[in-house]
Length: 613
Ligand code: ADP
Ligand code: MG
Ligand code: ZN
Image (tube, rainbow, N blue to C red; front, top):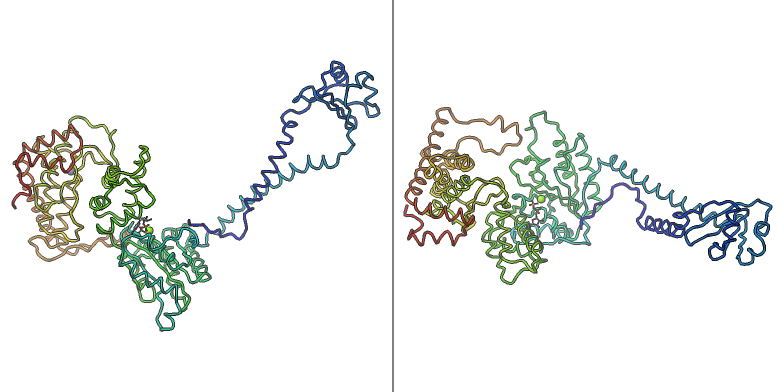
């Protein structure tokens, strides 16, 4: 696993020593436990005489240390008495009593006994004190050393990540294969006069395996891996980030060939001079330091800097210049084959039932990333373990797909009968219109069990991983989005707050159709700058690059698109009113309708889908 490398030179007292001390302490305690738990009681000489006379002395044994007479009356009850210095035991006890007794006269000043009794607890105490002191000091050291990098070093001997652990992502792996080769045999490239790349930037949405890939490169090349996250640089003191970078690179150079990995570099590498408050902030200094260090590498230093980001558009162009992160590797969301492969990787250590078909799971998870898929496998394992199953079944997988895609069910959420009814009609509205329009994604499930913030859900899944949307597809999607609103209106005479999120999404789609995609009468133009702004500041100062008159036109067209979609939905809902009622009432009773259950209603009613346009 990942080992956190200690930065302070001071060694912690090693655990063996601590264990040793504990054992000594415990032994001493056990050996003396009788004495500690049952300390002897002092009695007078006459009481001692009485004990002897009545034959109460345990095992007839008395011990004499100088003027102290020690004996026991039972196994656990010991007593002692003081005699006068000059008196002998024979003076105190009469002959008769003395005869039956064992008298042991212990030599005065039992040196070793005293040493042991005194020294062992003392030494133990001192070591304990030292142990705690060193811990406190350790904490102090940490406070002092925060200018050092917190870089984690991946132990290359243990638990190595390789390309095998990264499913799919073929192109990314192919490109990185080259980097691995550089690291493995730099001489080969140097002889050829080739410049070894200094920086590789991994670009892709969160959870697609960028960090995993970087680690796999180190694993494949069998070199140390120094990783640090951009967000860690954001500290309270200016200058700390820069000094950390310096420290990190110093360490890396000492360990070359190796990989320095800056995760989430956008946290420090954003375009400079775009901030609100002054240019010279912490982030900028850190970024400058990274650039300086990268430029400072001589050829042949064999340190490759890898970085990952999901926002390449916000990165400072200086980072992307040749000689810096001049190689970019794109890591995309996985397609269906890759999803299946990723699921397989994460199913490796899990007992799957024979009936499990990961392809089906891959089909149900378009748009999900590697991290989501890992999460699904894990949720399924938890689900099965909780129910004491021997293996993970398809059902467990499907329920965890739902959990990850839609959020966990909240059966305890209290809804009134009326709310539940409205929710049912609302969801069936989405589902029915979605089903009957040709360009909408197939309905996978309709449910009135609340999840997260939603009271109900209509879950539709695209058949393929799409990269493009047509105008018709947008229009149909808008209709099914508005169908919840329409259903409430048609069946209850008024609408609720339920559709607010639907309306928001619909409006935003319609607006983008007009202003970004040229899908309106205004034709092939875009309006407004793309929202790729760097800091909050620039977002606030968002510039409008069109006139007020044009703004009015845009608003009008957005409205028109929405209205058309609304009317289309209303026409369908009204036309299939009876079917709507039938499905909604059943949904109220069953709470969930699967795709096949949903399709049955249409078959029974003889309704062909999709409707002709
Ligand atoms: P990123 O850095 O891109 O946000 P990570 O590398 O942290 O994503 O990925 C998160 C987790 O998702 C990984 O630990 C891994 O278990 C899983 N994962 C992502 N992509 C893949 C993949 N292609 N193959 C196997 N597992 C993956
Ligand atoms: Mg990451
Ligand atoms: Zn809705």
